[in-house]
Every structure is written in C-alpha cells, then in structure tokens.
Image (cartoon, rainbow, N blue to C red; front, side, top):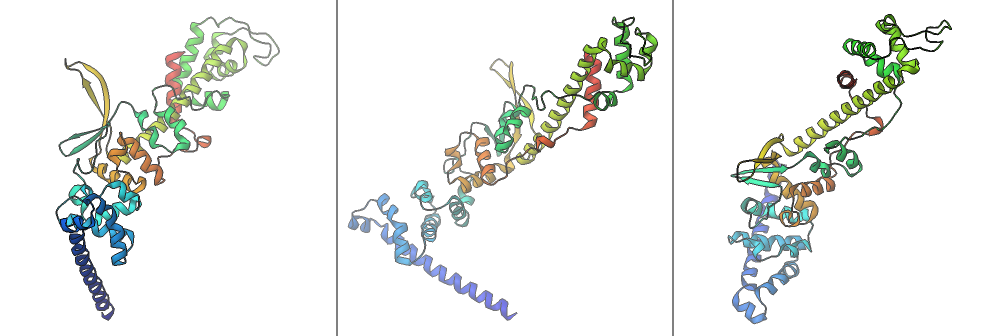
Length: 367
C-alpha cells in the first residue's frame, strides 16, 4: 500500500513539474512569437519558427524531441494545426518517423487531423472513398506481387499472373507411381476405348511383349485386361505417342494443382492482410456498356493503420510520397519484415488429391 502511495505521489510530482514546465514554455513561445519580439529581433515568423526548437532546447535544457513536442502541443492547444507553422521536412530532419508519429499521437494530432484529407494527404490512385468507406481497386491479382517477399516475387508473379505459371518445367514422369497409381476406373476405360477406336488393334509388338519370346499382335482381349494393357503402353513402341501424352497430362495436372494451391494460399494471405475478400465489379462506359472488370476490397479497417505505419517506417507523409496504396503497403511490409512469403519451392509438393482430380479430368478431355 505504501509503495502504491509513493508511486502516485511521484507521478503527481512529475505531472506537476511537467505542467509548470509546459506553462513556462508556452509563455516563452507567446513572447518569442509576438509581433513586438519578432520586430525587435528582425525575424519573420517563419525564420523564428525554424530557430525555436534550438532555443527551447537551450533555454529549458530539454532534448530535441521534447522541444518539438512542446512547440507542437503549443499550437494544438491554441486550436491550430502545427503543420501550418512547422514544415514536415523540418520535423523529419531532426526526428525519426516513429518519433514524429509518437508526437502526433501524444499531442492529439492524429485524433483531430488523421482523417483530414487536406492536412494529412491520403489520395491514392488505387483507392476510392465512398462515404466513410475506403475501397482498394485492382485490375488483376498480379498487382499484389509487390506485397510478397523479394526472394519469392518471381514465383509470385507467375502464380498471380494471367499466363501459365510453369512452376516445375519438364521432369521425368514415373509410369507406375505417377500415372498408373493415379488412374481412376473411368480413365482406364477411356484409355481402352481410345486404343480400340484407333488403329492399334492388330499392330505387331515386340517378341518380349508377352514374355514367351514370340511376336504378337495387339488383340482386343489384351486391351480389355487392365494390367496387361497398362504394362504394354509403358513398354511397347506402338504406344510411344500415347505414353508421352499421358505423361504430359500428368505434368499438366501436377502443375495445375500446384498453381491452384499456391494461388489460393497467396489469395488468402492477401485478403487476411487487407481485412476483406476481393469482389468483382463491372466498369461501364457512358453508354452503359461493360468495358472491363475490377477487383475491389473494403480496406476501411486497415486504411489509417498503414498510413500511420508508413509514416513511422519511412519518415514520409504517405499520401504525398506514394501514388498507390499498394506501393505504400509494400514498403511498410518490407520495413517491418512482414512481407507475404511462399513455401520453399524446392520442397513444395501440391496436394496429391488435386493432382489426381486434374489428371483424370485432363486425360478424359484431351486423349
């Protein structure tokens, strides 16, 4: 109990000292900025304002941040925007962005001016304001590539882009584990029908085809026997083209499954970051004709949050320094080490179930 009373008394003493110091600084500023004193010193108000932080530091024995804080709070308490008197460039020449933001918060500047578009510029090419809502609009998901870690951007650009991603390139397909093990009954029937409808029946095969050292021609009974025909497709020259096509369809399915999984993971990460799901909207010309579609996101909940974070990490007024909100957001994520990342592609394997689904779908539609 005694400890708590002591803490309260110390806080009161500190607060009292602060109030006395603040009042003294305010009186000092009133005097230094008065017309009489400006005329006496032969300074313009702008010239005196440039000198005041140094004067307050020296005359009141406070550090630079506290000097700026007192001057900033002085104008706030007079009901005026301090940035009309103190240029932002002057602040950032002596303070870090996090220190400026801290001063904005503690003096109540954010409370009063954060949502003031004139005082705190917040116009971005990719943001539309409707009422109290802010909407981020993009033409395509690939515009979010810059939110991804720099080391992963090459893959991210391909995954989010409109063209085929080509994540894996060419690789050898294992006949047994990749193709045979992934065929469903409908696909096996489709392959058998394809062979029967082609010109395969009656074609001569090698002397090793049936294991008896005799030359054989392909019969319908061989085609109907699943184990036999799958083995022959792998081994016999007459099925070279079919075998290559099946391998190609498997690679395509594997690629599709990987691209889909990575795209959905990126999409989820982006939407979680933005705080809303992307929605499609039509863009129409003056005649009412649809000219294109855009994707939009309600970023109301995060809009000001990242404006403040941008100021803190870049030491720039975000709405003046960046033309696009996404560019600003990208820089914030980079500086705070929070950029979206992809899995290590050397060890990424797509969902086997999706590969199986795509493989059988592609096979039945393309062979």
